[in-house]
Length: 546
Ligand code: NAP
Image (tube, helix red, strand yellow):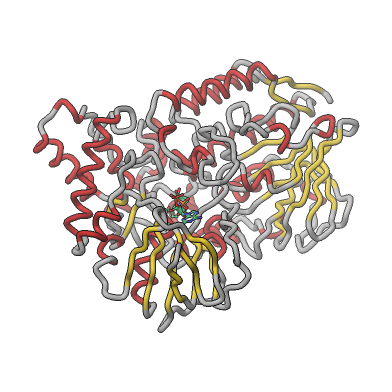
């Protein structure tokens, strides 16, 4: 079917309809992929579980949700007019602004006609006879496509611990990653938040302002640095827009994975005095956010260096939090940055409020939910609302919750039983013509996601274009290339402190999940590697006429 034969409304697809490509998900990845493939004259159907576009920014509507990458950097660059016309009001964008931006993108490029909402994909099965993917939805539809592109996100399968008595609680239950569309009113209520990761750290200060009482159930304290959010500097915005392309290029070339304008200090922190160290940490603390990790070049390589940063943050916590016992409980003893560093707006200060209580659920874990609240050990906490800020089955969860089957009926669950295996984080042996945007084994969550997504989208778009021009219809990595890539991803991670803590990067937050470091720590060299693979005639891939 050619692009001109596409239907103008995407409310449903007649079963049996064939497309050049099916894209699963309408977040940043799905929208960019749709735009790119349509430009190549392909028929594309995007299947999206939500009622609107936005992905992460559609689902994570919890109070205080905000991006921890700066607005001027966390946006698409595929269209110059788009990046010129959009005005970002704050240094770090709140969720409603990013969602508005993505809706604007969908409208501006007339994308909705090719997106089918309210459509959760149940299965995707490769047919070796036809070289086509059959995708079935929970609504009972069945579509086919030559290419199947998973734009399902790295943090989109919410994790809700399976507490005893979960159904017995008579109050309201929320998950930060699946927040209701309508306003949640905590006024006059006793609220409990379970978890102290990024989502909790952003929502706790706002919930505390609204609730009658807030109890925070903390299993592991987290490092957090003030975000330093402020209104966008119009001069800076103007300056960047004057040559946005050069700005983006600099970002791509910089070693700073979060695509920031700020450079790493390149100081070896152990070679300077404590006073000099503290001055550097203070400077990065004042800059705000994740950039704190660039205070020294060896923070994530050397435990001793890392400990100096850890102690700097602990000292800040002790200074901010007035009650010494609460401050002590909030002080992490782990490696800074090993779990994703958090960026907050008044998180530690919130514990000075009289209506906020911190409860340690490491020493006395949550045993069960009860009709009135929850119980840890012998203590029952009476609550009107429980907020699960308990994170996600990251990187693989959204893929493995679908029934994806490749050659010879091999399921992705079987293939990845010991952990995800990909070539470049984009493809996996046995699953021809299936691409994963920001898949495990790609830099993804360790970078500024939007440019990383666009790099994947461009690589996939170029690859499909090449295949079609050469009248080839199948691309699949070969086992040796995939094995070498998996080994390389692990080897690089092994040089750092990342594997030393129980993070979601390692799947350690999900009981029974194989412990494998999932993202690739190789930005920006990764982009060069992907380009080299293409330049060498798709080295590591088998291409065929089917
Ligand atoms: P998370 O970082 O995985 O945090 C989950 C929290 O829930 C942890 O504190 C965890 O404790 C706790 N928890 C899980 N199961 C529990 C149980 N049975 N009992 C008690 N506590 C339990 O999840 P998240 O906060 O949603 O963040 C996930 C990622 O999303 C972030 O790391 C970040 O990459 C991204 N994110 C970004 C932003 C932003 O841009 N600003 C905002 C939100 C999220 P343990 O640590 O002990 O497991």
